[in-house]
Image (tube, each protein chain N blue to C red):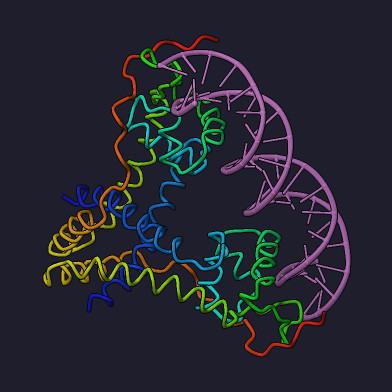
Length: 159
Length: 159
DNA sequence: TATTGTTATACTCTATAACTATA
DNA sequence: TATAGTTATAGAGTATAACAATA
């Protein structure tokens, strides 16, 4: 019984993931790689995050992350400023443009999902919502929140 | 209401995906890249699939797929034989070793998921099972089944 | 001495183009 | 002429090593 449910989970979750990915991909205005997209997501939740913060989140090394961020910076999707408290660190934040391209993709995806859910019966929506709540508790966010070290106060980086 | 549910879906599904990925990764006996792993999965469901079949499934080009398959072949995880009917085509199948390394990872992951589900209340399991059924219908397998062209009869490839 | 971030270099994975063999 | 697959070459993306600046 439990194993059947696990097997279902293992089969069905990738189907939903694939659909979500496809929507996100279809609606990104910028040509962004997956790590770049995830970086924008992360920065929306964690404005002022450092390079190491982002690297940890993505599971990439700092050098790779640094290079990848260069691409976002050159397209004005984020800002990279030096931190006042600890001048080794950088503080990255989304620009308006970065927020917008992210929002557009997310909202379009939400819309598509909502449309799909609209075709469900009310009790099916009830069941799904309940199940998602159960899953959220069973599979909590692994990501450790940023240690609070990250600066809100930043100074403009010299050119 | 529907949109809340969509938003939940968009947040929770990645959490579960991440947990599944982590388990699969932890329990792979061979050092396999993600596409290699997916290829083994695909061949288990579609024995005798051709190179183009696999390439389409992965969203890779035939040359990339060919090279990637070389790595699986050299480790005896699959066989690559010429097709009798259409001698341009190849027919790939998992070897016993390929099946085993796949099964090991999948079973270990299932075990981990089952353990988690074991801690649920019976009615929670009921709800989850029901929700998964709903999702399966809403997000059907996009992948078109192989056109039946693929050979069951194969001839050994010449060296 | 340890940490943050960058630069330099090499490797892996992928694609495009050109080719062979078969249909 | 079109299709299945491979080889050759080039471009992203990643890692490791070495470095500079700061703590």
